[in-house]
Image (cartoon, helix red, strand yellow):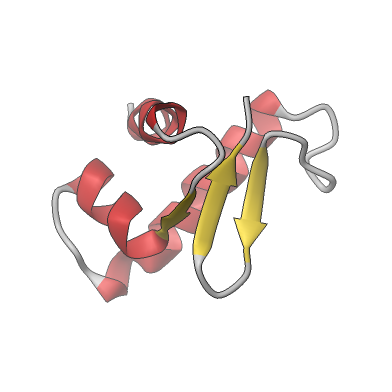
Length: 72
């Protein structure tokens, strides 16, 4: 269910950089730096399911030091 919520958030903002803080607030309803790793874990799961080659993503890009960007 959390991966689905994360994917829904990404799909609402195609091509835009979404910060980890924003994603935490949208998916978990809070801004907690202690849970930043949750976003990484869920994003990795989405990549395994969506990407042909998760190590070279086409849809879900990491913006180092900022967050993530989703291309559909």
